[in-house]
Length: 401
Image 1 (cartoon, rainbow, N blue to C red):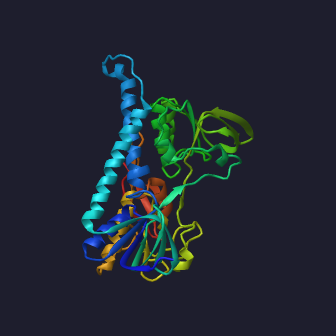
Image 2 (image 1 turned 90 degrees about the horizontal axis):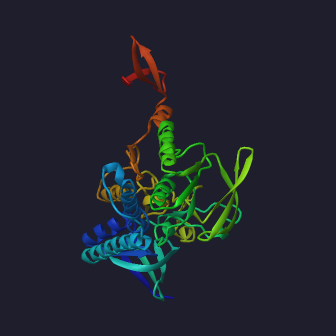
Image 3 (image 1 turned 90 degrees about the vertical axis):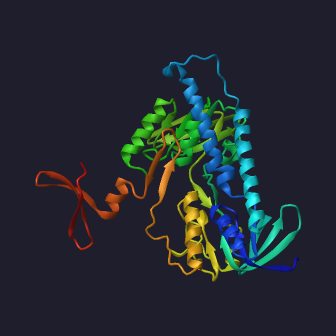
């Protein structure tokens, strides 16, 4: 067993909040260690936000080239080289990782590559990537271990070896027919991109509409957009069985209401949600409790149930966006220096990078009506928006016109 090494700060996971905390604490003169299992800088620059935007932009260029005659442009035969698409993305990711390593070096924070598991309060044992192990303890610990794509318990789905966003972003071939499971952000972005890169795409959503967290009129506009691009969208449809191997040939058994059918394809992309990476990291030995959904239990200052241990980002149940994770860092860091920041009531920008992009800040109309009991009313011949407060008093907010 390795001797325990003492640090001022230990960060488990190098995502957006974790790396910012590490760089900042080290620059402030604290001996800081960061334990990262696989991706330097976290998911965003490696397998999520940035590489997906790279692929999406390439897909948009491909779409514009395919429509060149609409713009009065004549060109010769055009084909898509998926190996070239991948190489462009890989070059970008490699460059960003180098930038991260430079920032670690400049800050003085030590990055330790390996699998970290809590063995007692504020103490982590690391199985090093290159062999051996180290045990690190610290006065302050920050957990930023992120989340991973969920694979449903549909019979034989896991055995079919489906893609998640990670494998989809590493494709060096153009799948003939991709079946996308899920009509949320990832399914929408990757489904449209793959269609524009030349794949036939079928998108299956078990709910009654795409982007279920958006207003119904927005969901309807998305449905029309996707169908206009030649994407086959199946709503209120459940996958009850799978046969075959993704990347070769697959058959999905579907049920919609009282109707049963099958759909054949070459590849499956699963995009039905994410699971926090809180299992198997020894949180119970650190005195850190989790919620029913598997997130680390935190208060509105992102403090866990263990003294001097904070959790930030997706693993803490914060909205699954990089900019929110960065705000988590800001909240914790300011509070460590006497601030009184909380997560309560913060406005969260949302964006889905389909083309055209879908974005909003805070609540949508449906959520606002539900939360604040908003109603429309006629007063003196004018259409007004009203809200009933908990005491039953009516407040007039604005003229919707």
